[in-house]
Image 1 (spheres, rainbow, N blue to C red):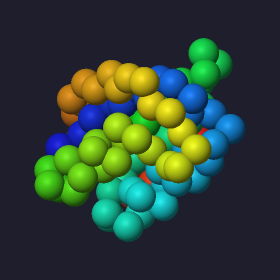
Image 2 (spheres, rainbow, N blue to C red; image 1 turned 180 degrees about the horizontal axis):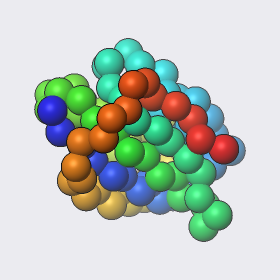
Image 3 (cartoon, helix red, strand yellow; image 1 turned 180 degrees about the vertical axis):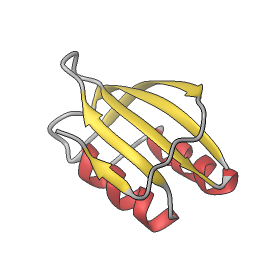
Image 4 (cartoon, helix red, strand yellow; image 1 turned 60 degrees about the vertical axis):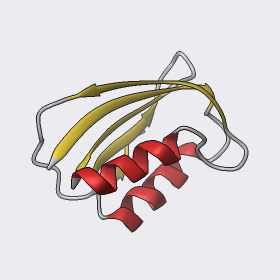
Length: 89
């Protein structure tokens, strides 16, 4: 089990990034949350089996169709007691 904090930069708000992130996390069986930040980036905390998290990180490099990801900041964090994947508002 691995866990990461990801900050996604670029055109990532107003393009269904949070909803698409939840769908991708649910399909891969990952836990955590996603939230828009005031600076226009998207913050994600994600955890699960390493191979599934790696697939998720690859997806984050481009995101949904209308997103334009310019950069990912990824930091490994301690595993949390998440029970699902949620969108935070």
